[in-house]
Each structure stands twice: as C-alpha cells, then as structure tokens.
Amino acid sequence: MKWKSYQIKVRSLDPEAARTFLSGQPVDRVSILDVRQPVEYEAGHISGARLIPLPELMDRMGEVPRDRPVLVYCKSGIRSRAACQLFAGGSFPGEVINLSGGFDFWEGGAALGREDQGLALFSGRESATEILEVAYCLEQGLGEFYLSMADQVDNPEVQRLFSTLARMERLHQESILGEYGRLKGREVTPAVFEHRLAPGALEGGMTTQEYIDYYMPDWDDPRDVVSLAMSIEAQALDMYLRAAARVENALGRAALEKIAREEQTHMAHLGRLMETLSQ
Image (cartoon, rainbow, N blue to C red; front, side, top):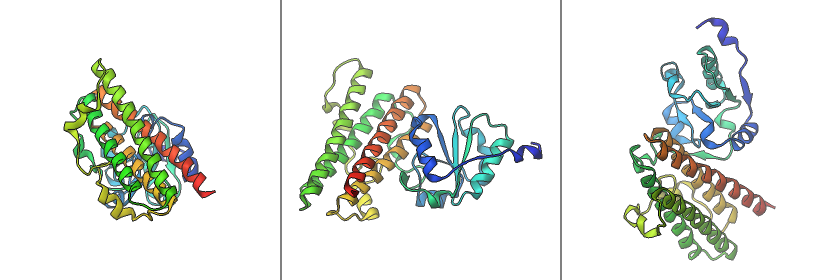
C-alpha cells in the first residue's frame, strides 16, 4: 500500500449522528466493527458489533462485508480512526465511518459479554425453522418473566408496564409463529416449540437472574423497568446479528436478520415509551 492512501479523509460521526445513521439503516445492511481488545468488548459494546482488535485487522479485513457501510469504533476514537485509514489503504470499496469519541460517549443500544455470548443456542448449522423455534422460546421466556414480575410488584403503574411488555413479546411470538408456518407450508400451533424450551433463558442468551444481578433495577420505578427491557432487547439484537454472521444457510441467515430487525423496532418502541415516562 502506498503512504498517500493513508491520507484519505475519513468520515466521522458523533454518537448522536451515528445512532441516527444506524436507526435509518436495516440492521443487516450495515456493519459495526469494534477494534478494541476482547476484555473491553466483554465489558460493553454496541449491539451487533463484530470484534476484530486493531492489531489483527490487517490479517482479518476479509471478514468485514464489502457490500455495505462499516461503522468503526474503539474506546475514544483514536484506534478506530487508525482502523479507518487501514480500510482506505486497503482499497475497501464500501463507506467507512469513524465513531468520534468512541464507546466512552456512546449511549443506548449497548450490550454485554463475550463475542460468543448466547451463541451456544445457535451452532450455525440450524435450518431456518430450527432458528425460529429457538427464537420463539426465548421470546416466551421473556414474556413469562414480565408476567411473573407484574404479580410481584405493588406499584400499579409498574404492573401495567410489565403487562404491556409481556404483550409485546406475545406479538413477536405470533410473528415468529406465522413465519414458521409460512416456511413449513402449513398452519402450526405453539405446541411445536415445546421441545425447544430453554429453562431460565431470555432474549440475548442470558438468564433472568443474570439480568437482574447485573442491572439491579428499582422494580418500583417505571423508567428502571423500561431501561431493563431496552437492555434485554439490545442483548437480543446483538446475539441475533452475531448468530446471523456465522449461520451457514441463506434461509437461516435471513430468518435471524428478520428477527434482529424486529428487535430494533422493539427498542425504538421502548425508547418512545421511556420518553413518555420522563415527561
């Protein structure tokens, strides 16, 4: 590579502009690249981000899809800017964007855990219908969690909120069930999913207790409850996108990307709900 290639101007977006950019893109038509170290990624990362530490980027650049924009970030924006220059020097054909300020200034849509967090649920060899079975059961686990919490809290507003969240999960289950029936070519009932139930697991691949222990929400504060729900949806979006990147068949990958888009819609709905609670 010639030195002058490293002088190409890199487009930068601050976190607010980056969130606007990402919200206007289908989740499966933009790549998010984290160039920090694994320990930093585990502590928190943007949902759907692929981890390729900067020292490994030159050798692994081929892992980044070349047919879509890529948003690159690190802790503060310094390593990611260097990564963007490497892309430019490597004649990457797509648009490359640096997240100025890095993850330190990112708010919302963050996820936790290792790069393989929750992927034990998906080997990468599942068919589209098998993927939908897992997703349906994860939605069911979360819906049951919300309903159980509605029975445990005393605040009527929080009780109604948990019931609303449970209805959202039921609607998503109905969508998954409809897609499952379409792929099977016949009408199906929820009974087909009973053998795939994962006790205690929620969306994002974590257990009920793991979410509670990490976020420690105030169950009497509606904003804390919505914040927890948004965190769970962020984990789910993250897991489904990472699973889609490793799945082997096109139908299965499309199924995961469709579910991820629906999780993105859920997050937007919860964001609007949070705004009403803050007024």
